[in-house]
Image 1 (cartoon, one colour):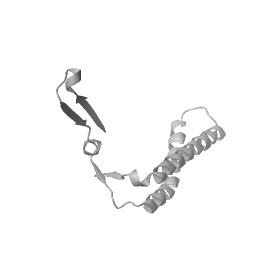
Image 2 (cartoon, helix red, strand yellow):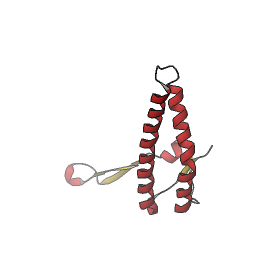
Image 3 (cartoon, rainbow, N blue to C red):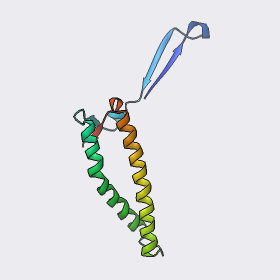
Image 4 (cartoon, rainbow, N blue to C red):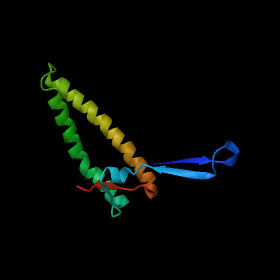
Length: 110
């Protein structure tokens, strides 16, 4: 993220440019993965989808453990949530793939 303030002599400020940066990569301990290709990204999305859907299902089941919802109501909630997640991940991945030349992939150092 970059923000630039420019002060010009005609607005009463000094003739200088200040650049402030927030280094999100450094702050979060990330490492760029320049080896991730467009094809590898597609494969990662496909492979990870089932795992993420399983996590969503388990989270919903745990969240409803002490509710009075029936198993059918919980399953309906799971289906609705997974369907919305699939739509969101498809939109996000589609946007990333269309703009692949501008995409940078990072992983946590740990």
